[in-house]
Amino acid sequence: MASLPAAVPTTAGRPEYTPNRVADPSYVRILDTTLRDGEQAPGAAMTAAQKLSIARQLVLLGVDVIDAGFPSSSPEELNAVKSIAAEVGSCAAAGSHVPVISAIARCNRRDIDAAWAAVGGARRPRICTFIATSEIHMKHKLRKSREEVVAIAGEMVAYARSVGFKDINFGAEDSLRSDKDFLCRVFGQAIKAGATTVVIADTVGCTLPSEIKALVSYVRANTPGIENAVISIHCHNDLGLANANTLAAIEAGAREVEVTVNGIGERAGNAALEEVVMAIKCRKELLGGIYTGINTKHISETSKMVVEYTELNVQPHKAIVGANAFSHESGIHQDGVLKFRGTYEFISREEIGLNQTNESAIVLGKLSGRHALKSRLSRLGYDVDGAELDAVFRKFKEWTGKKKRISDDEIEALVCSKPVQSQPIWSLGGVQVVHGTLGFSSATVKLINMEGKEKIASSSGIGPLDAAYKAIETIVQTPIKLVEYTNTPLDGINSIFSTQVVLSEDHSQLSAFPPIEKVNGDANDFGPSGKANGHSPSGKANGHAFSFNGSGEDADIVVSSVQAYLQALNRMLSMKYSI
Ligand SMILES: CC(=O)SCCNC(=O)CCNC(=O)[C@H](O)C(C)(C)COP(=O)(O)OP(=O)(O)OC[C@H]1O[C@@H](n2cnc3c(N)ncnc32)[C@H](O)[C@@H]1OP(=O)(O)O
Ligand SMILES: CC(C)C(=O)C(=O)O
Image (cartoon, rainbow, N blue to C red; front, side):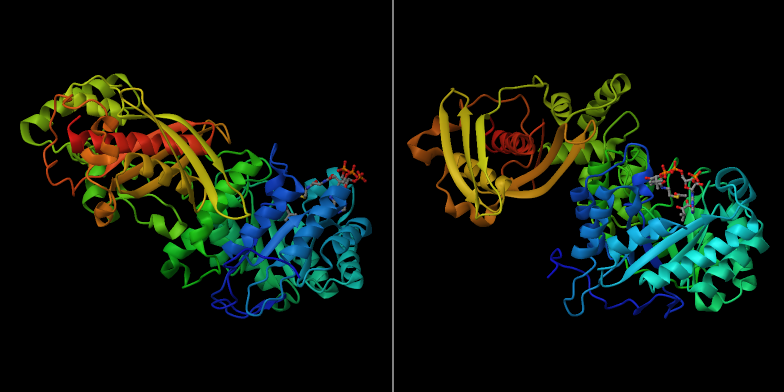
């Protein structure tokens, strides 16, 4: 039996799938073509295993149709699509959502046979067979007349039916540059031969939303038999209008949309799944109450997976999934967001599964203001106000006027005049982890105190980081609460990880550890006593209000995570013991 990831969405909340009609007129089917048109982006080629992982993730996301690939392009691609059909397209668990698995084919027998060989075994197999209908394509590329194209469309849809397909998506390549009556004639012929969905394709991305709207309406009104088929839309982004055009098509009655994760695809890409879906979700009242079956909480994770496998990074300012989509660097915005997030964020970060808090959304820089600086200082353990804050703010502006980024260490240096890299209380001597799927993970950590003494501890945990963090806790004998953890790959994929953590002392566990001075009878474990840093953070006596940031960078995610944890821990301990 096919295996699917845990937490597979159920069929609840989406109308039952029928190839040639969408039972609820408010429902918009999502066809994800990341594995087909997305893979057509230069450099995006994926291995069969990567395609299968993405297909599994698309099931979690809840897409209705997975356009899995072009089986006739190679035996390897045929096998990749076949394994997607066998694994993610065949689950029979009662009540679970099983996506339709589609394979693409030109209008010829060889391609259609390959498509059936690839997806015929799926619970809901589908083919998309296509042919171009514009004069420019028919004349120069296909070298066929209109009559020939109409005939081929009908014959090949009928052939697809004869090999076993009952769910047939017929695509008219370059629809927007086609004569619209001819387009309706070809669609009519395809429907007559058994097509259940017809795709209007803006293949070269040359259209405006008003044109798309007009064409969808025209096709609805003038295609013979269109009441027996679903209209689908496939938009390219050459004018940056793919999403707008997709939404315009929905407004005109299209009920299936072809999209890709991160908008990848041929040339400038396709309409982006996350942008179209979030536009529908956030503005559905303006779109006639339409909805999709997408579980948006998986968007962020899916986007990262596609970046990793295709090695196509998303630009930082990309909507929904760009690194800056929920970050704020300018003072007025930061002040607003710190007071009430909704002032500058109308989409909730949680809705797309982003693990980001208000604090990590604030990026300090040249245009930041006092509220954001004060907030960061308080995270670092410094309660600065009034004239003192003004003075620190002046120094902050001088610094950020010369330098693009300011680190937490540099901010600390502004407030307490200590050297940026003061000696840490505990530094990392080494870390070794063992982990996998055959039982608990374990970690051994070596820390070195300020006098150069080494301490080693091992621990098990749920995953390598949990084990490593527990081992550190054992050495430092302080109960620690991990408040936040984020990890971002820098400089492309799998090169350097940047980890940010926020820690606080875990007051609920304090009694589990002996008082600091008595740990192993050795007060020096925490480094030299009485080395004040020149600034006594206020509020240190109660300690309860503070949490501490730390960051780490390394090619190894465990090492960067341990570095970040240690930095935050050192800040916590320095404040606690005024070292
Ligand atoms: C708009 C789109 O995104 S369509 C999808 C595009 N995706 C791809 O092309 C990816 C996979 N493609 C491939 O691996 C290869 O192109 C193959 C294996 C499919 C074909 O390779 P080849 O046989 O060497 O042909 P090649 O790609 O060079 O040329 C395409 C041929 O298909 C014909 N053709 C193009 N579209 C269609 C169509 N929809 N129906 C029938 N024939 C078509 C062309 O006219 C040309 O035929 P010709 O050889 O008689 O001139
Ligand atoms: C085959 C069709 C749907 C296509 O990908 C395009 O025209 O861009």
